[in-house]
View 1 (cartoon, helix red, strand yellow):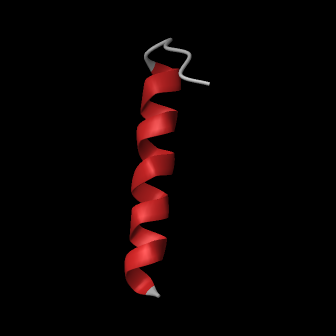
View 2 (view 1 turned 90 degrees about the vertical axis):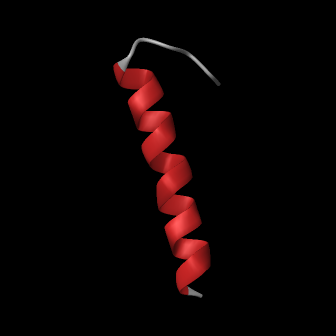
Length: 26
């Protein structure tokens, strides 16, 4: 399912962006 993959990548991208900004969301 392409939509599922895109959503997964979007979430992963947000997490990586947050980590790059020095935030700890986990």
